[in-house]
Amino acid sequence: MGEVRVTSQCSKGGFSVKDVGAVTFAIQSFVTLFVIMDPPGAAPIFLGLVADKTQRVRRILAMQAAAVSFLVISLFALFGRVILEYLNISLEALQAAGALLLLLVALELLTGNAKSMNDDSNTNVALVPLGTPLLAGPGAIVATMIFVQQVDSREMGFALVAAVIAVHIAIALVLMASTTILKVIKETGVTLVARIAGLLLAAIAVQMLVDAIRVFVAA
Image 1 (cartoon, rainbow, N blue to C red):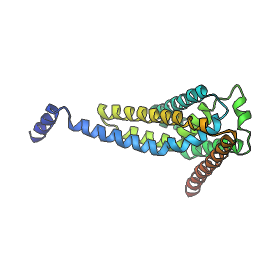
Image 2: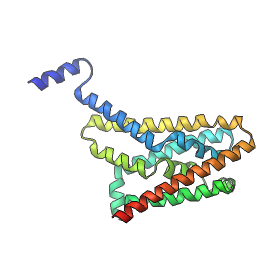
Image 3: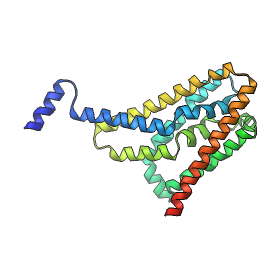
Image 4: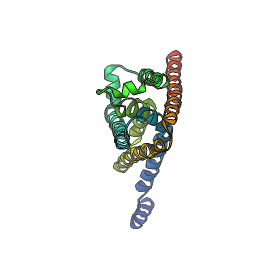
């Protein structure tokens, strides 16, 4: 009877114990995914890839990158374990593949060939490498799959959905806000941003590859 009274009293105030747990879970999920996906850290790379675009196109690409990341994260949240098991792919292999793709893009930025890559009519940087694997990378995918396993009620399910949506809204806002920097700097500054972005992206790619190799060696 004690538990029933506590729950009913909380409900009269507008919140139940489950609601409080769901809010905590939502905050934990949001913070974890935001730190892993690191929108501020992705902003310089985004600027390096869209420096030759118009302001309107940059904003569209920012929203597209967030949307692609959301779709990838949602897909793996729902079917990730089944997909990887069916294809017999380990998370480490997925991480290594993403690292190699990022390294290729980093080399394009460092050598000044990013413009020719962007000029390809069949290339959309919002899809690759921004949406995935930079934003929706192995770390974010694994974290989301773990959070899905922890869901044990409808409230926690809604909390996780809200957290994932909020993270991607934040990503879109950060990337769109970063485009104002390109209004201030001149062409030389754009080139500098592209080189810095290439260096950062190369470092991220190498770290991802090293982490995957460590797991393979330890296995």
